[in-house]
Amino acid sequence: IRKLAALAFLVLVLAPDPARALIGDTPTIRRVSLCPSDPVIDPKVDGIAMLGQNRDGSFVLIVRTFHRDTGMQMGSTLSVPIPQGTVPVELIFSAAFDSGHVLVLDTALRIHSFNVAFDADGTPKLIGDVPAIHGPFGNPAVVGAGTALAEAPGIDGPPYLAIGTAGGR
Image 1: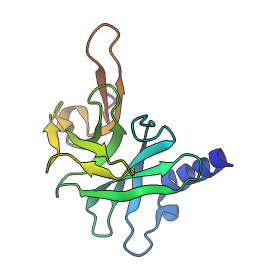
Image 2: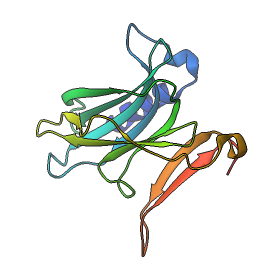
Image 3: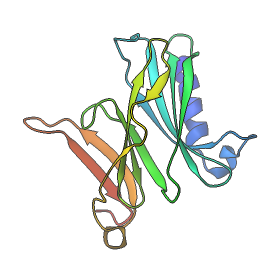
Image 4: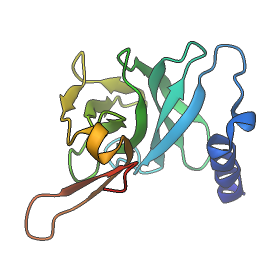
């Protein structure tokens, strides 16, 4: 049943716009990234990072933790406004490239690195006041806007970070 509930949640989150209508002041969720369990907190507690879009068009990073067995939220929600003029398109909980950070790719091919830690009760907290911004990694007018973000551990060297663009480069 948990797998079905998770699948239904992802279908709802990633469905076309009609299914993502705003309810009250809740942001529309545009992207989701799961964080693996943290054995220091509890191996049954999972983190989730989401990119939300507010009614006014601004964006917010939302981080929560949930208990794997009960589905109940642990601790409080972390909400961090994305700077005005930034259009985020993808995010990942980094496990290789910048472990402990949520990496957010924007259309201008920049990566915003949010250092996130978790309290003992599962409450996520931002370490530092602002994210580190890396890039741009190319000219969007030439290679296209950023569209995808992925990472992989390096076999005999540093990890890899891959950025996809609308131009397919």
